[in-house]
Amino acid sequence: MGAAVSEGYVDFRGYRTWYRSAGEKGTPLLALHGGPGSTHNYFAPLERLAEERRIVVYDQIGCGNSDRPTDVEWSVQLFRDEAVAVREQLGLDRIHLLGSSWGGMLALEHVLSGADGIVSLVLSSTLASLDDWAAEQKRLRADLPPEVIEVMDRHEQAGTYDDPEYEEAMEVYFDRHFYRGPKPRPELERMNEGRAPDVYRAMQGPNEWTPTGALRGWDVRDRLGEIGVPTLVVRGRYDMCTDAIAATLVGGIANAREVVLEESSHTPLLEETERYLEIVRRFMSECEGTKPPWPTKSSA
Image (tube, rainbow, N blue to C red; front, side):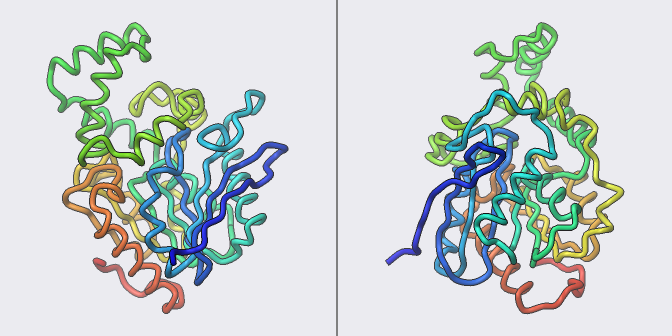
């Protein structure tokens, strides 16, 4: 028999936030998905850990199976409050917290808000400064084929981000730095079906190197030293989370450890699933047997 699975809704500001919970044992793992405006679907492989511990994922408000209000102000505070509501209503008092990409930013916000009960923090392909992130994405963009850059330049100058030609050019960037595995990939197909471009644009902007939304100027670099939770920074070799981005996290958080998956980009959970799961499994187990502060900076 597999682990027990339940799905339902958390009430948040009068709207419904959809969640899925698998497993019943141990200290739960709560996973925060990226975007903003993406969905939980690419976290599906995490449920392989559900025989060992409870795995909880949810679709953030505005996307996936959750309600899509049109009368809210999209902000970091909104999503911070939602994460608190999810923890409170699902009884997630003591957790391991994993955040991927934007979800990692949200995880950092949650920890830095003084949240209690966090046994460990997994920062997966994420960042501490949106300006740094945008600069690194511009660098990756500059390495794309000239004909692709020409298409991007033309449409970005015209503001025609929804043009199929622009979207096709963006796929070249995503194929290098977001997901490098075989296609079609069901988890990503489902994510694309449920994602919310309007939320992404309101929070981020039209693309990864043009931050014009509510996240513009977001920066927690000078607060990383406040984090006393055992922290793992995990990413892919070809990740949008580049060496420089990851170095800021690893250097700023006391005794953080870093693992780079050599065949992956921005979705290592899908690209090197077994290796990723083993790294996260081992890290959580070690943290449950260790009292903070995390003893030494070392490789996993």
